[in-house]
Image (cartoon, rainbow, N blue to C red; front, side, top):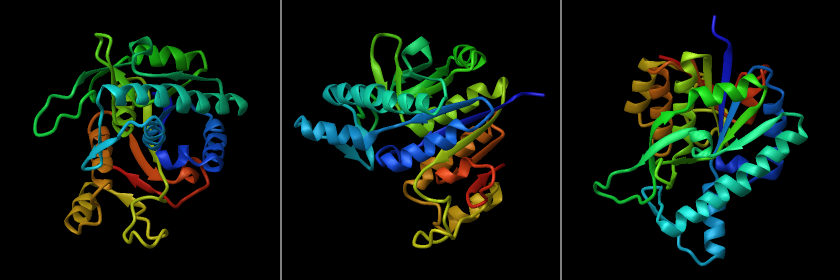
Length: 259
């Protein structure tokens, strides 16, 4: 029987709220089984770029990562956001280690090919160094990954944090029974976006199609759910979406995704 592993991704709205971040990291630290944390930091990067007089370009909600932007993103994701989280975890007696995709060749990627839009230095993942991650877990370290990969030729690449979390959970699925958690500001997938308590508690493939047809799953939730089902079709045991309370064992109000 495989040991259990939790892969938890936190959204920018958690990272940017000191109170929420501290609360989440306290809860995360109490998880007894092996665990991995993945984070982004897009809004922090946008704020720093603005202070430095660098324009942040978005197309359909996706960041265009030019040569100036990748420098900002590397500083914020791999530096400020990552090391702040690691330091707070250490304060919670969780021995964490901060990583980008370049550290230990953890996440290999290639620059996204130009089609209709040139996204710049954005990476699409080629592979996860599962042996490295497993070796860290086995010495009781908790890996904390920022949303950066690398191309093996010296170039850092901006990579969607939801995708990184999904690919890490998939990669570790050969060794562990993995559960993927997406923590964000909502309590889960909502039937009514104006009603915080209208959570769809369980979504299987049939229910997923129904919610797509009804346009309940739309906009920013679409790529998140695509990552969920990509993970479930590739070794991941279960995917959960909800707010930071979700990772407590005694909470019930969140969305569980299964095949």
